[in-house]
Length: 134
Image (cartoon, helix red, strand yellow):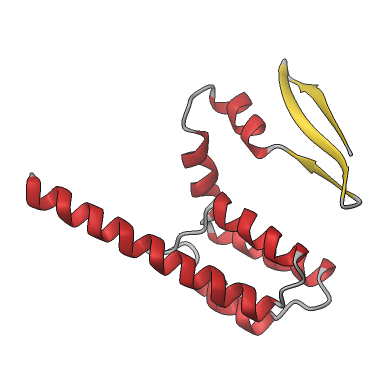
């Protein structure tokens, strides 16, 4: 594995070569290059919840994942783009960890769904407390 920086339009973008026989490009560096702000997490989160991004991820999984369960994925794709749909980079990182652990897709989706529900519950509790204090 080697980490290198490539220069695109006077911006340095990190690329990891050879991790698990794959190459990875840093989305955070790409967003920073185009945005020049500290809100990269928001930009990436908004990108990850878009319907066309979710559709792309489904096509990629279908091409590269022999265990891909397209029917289970349809529920995610149908929910994407709505105000209630959240898919964060952290969730994608967890999904990658679960994949490398060999967890089947159905179990991964259930586990990620449980985590998302827990996160939403925490956020709803925090928001309601702020409203009450206001």
